[in-house]
Image (cartoon, rainbow, N blue to C red):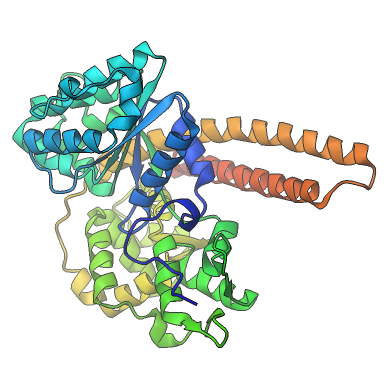
Length: 441
C-alpha cells in the first residue's frame, strides 16, 4: 500500500476531512468579511481550497477566487498576484462579462471593484479567499491609505471575503488605530480554526475516504487523538511515523512509542512560531500550565495576581479555541503532547522571551466580538438541526420498524451534530459568564 498520509502540503476533495460545519458557517454568517485565524499547519490553506472547490462545483451565487498573499509586501506586489490569480481561473468569470481589460495589474482595489460590479449584474457575488493574510501588516506599514481602500472593498455586501492568517494579524489593529472609521479587523467577524471533530479525526486516521483504508484498532486511534488533540497536521505527522505496509499491500499503524512524540526540527520550528504568536500574558499562562502539567482556574488566578480573573478567562478561552490548551475535567493542560514535550524541555529559555508582536488587548476585543457572532450562528444551527431531527424521527416512526439502516444512521448523525452544537453554545455561555465584570468582582 502506498503511503496514505499527506504531511506538509494542502489538500482538498477526498483527502480533506471534516470542517463542513465550519464551511457552512463561513459561507452563511451575516458578516460579509470573516477573519479565519489558526496556528501554523492547522489547515487554513486546505480549508480555503476546499471552499473554492465546493463553490465552483456548486455553480451558485458565489464565484470563488483564491488569492495567496505569501511573499507580497507592497500594494504593487499584491496587485500583481491578484492579476495572476484571476488569469489562472478566468474561465469562472468570463460567463459574467469579465474580460482582461477589467484586470488592473497596478491596483488590486480597482480590479476587485470591477469584477464585483460585473458579477452583481448577473446576480452573482465574488467569494474572495485570501491566504497568508499576515502580508497585509507590511502593506499597512508602507501604505496605510491603500490598505484602507482595500478594506472598503472587503466590506462590500456584493462580495464575501474570508481572510486566513495566524494571530499575528492583530498587529493591523495597532497600525490602523488612527483610522477615522475603526481599526482594520473591527470590520471582520472572527472564526477560529482548530481541531477536527472526533468522527472526522477517526476517518483521517483510518483514511476512510480512500479506496484502500488503514487498519487501526480503536485503542490506538484513541491514543493518537489524545497525543494530537485532533490537530489534523499532528494526526498525520504521528501516523506517518507509525505507518507500516503489511504483506498483501494492507496498511496498518504500529503502537506508539515514547520517541514518536518527540518533535523533529521541522515541527519544532512550527511550535516556535506558534509560541511567538502569543502575547506575553498568554505565554505566562502556557508556561505555567506546562510546568505544573495541569492547573485549575483558581490556581491560574493565584499565579497571575496582576491580571484580572475575567481577563485571564478571556485569554484561556482564546488559547483553548486555537489549541494551545485543552480542558481535562476542571483543569487546563497543554494542547497536545508534542507541544507539551517542547515546552517542558525549554521552559527556562522560553521564560526569557520578553517581546511579542501580538498585543493581547487587541486580540481580546476581536475574540469577544467573534464569540458573540459564533453563538448567534450556533443557535440558528441548533434550530435547523432540531427541525431536521424531528422530521427524521417522524419518518422512522411512520415506517414502524421497517426503516432502512440509512435512516437510522442519519438520525444518529443528526443527534451527534445537535449535541456538539449544544455543547459549543454551553461553552460560549460559560465564557460569557466568566468574563462579565460581575464574575471577576
